[in-house]
Length: 178
Ligand SMILES: [Zn+2]
Ligand SMILES: [Zn+2]
Ligand SMILES: [Zn+2]
Image 1 (cartoon, protein in one colour):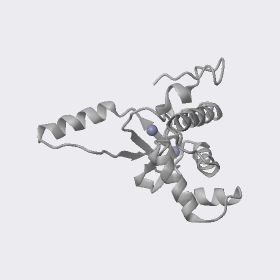
Image 2 (cartoon, protein in one colour; image 1 turned 135 degrees about the vertical axis):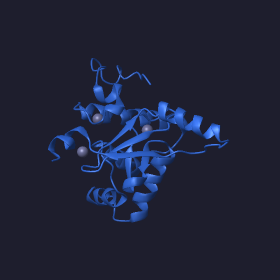
Image 3 (spheres, rainbow, N blue to C red; image 1 turned 120 degrees about the vertical axis):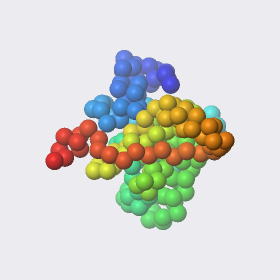
Image 4 (cartoon, rainbow, N blue to C red; image 1 turned 90 degrees about the horizontal axis):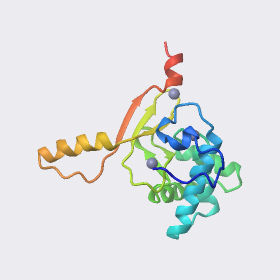
């Protein structure tokens, strides 16, 4: 979805990370990409009345540091280092909130979480997961979903939820793989 990030970052509206979140594997100005997504999440939370408390916001910032999935334990370690305490429920509840709000996705394959790179958009993401470095990209899922819908319809099946995850090697890891 085109979003107005010209007002957030004047003159930088050609950021690859923003205009094509699915290109998460490509080299791009990730600081800009992360700042943009965080700003959008804050706007969405303000609009919906969801409380982006300091710990929830910090967890989102941690997830946004890279396009990689992080386990709850790693998030907890980071929170503890930031002075948010060492209570696992704090990390779990913050992650749950972010998933509920659509600000993060649970990556089941890795039992980990990744920031949503286009919060606020209706999307059924297809995740491309690098098994070597845990990088995660959200691929456009519409064509995949359309094919699934057609297959389901043909046999009278009503899809309620899909969770499409593909495992493989990202471009960077492919070049070092034997
Ligand atoms: Zn990025
Ligand atoms: Zn998403
Ligand atoms: Zn990789």
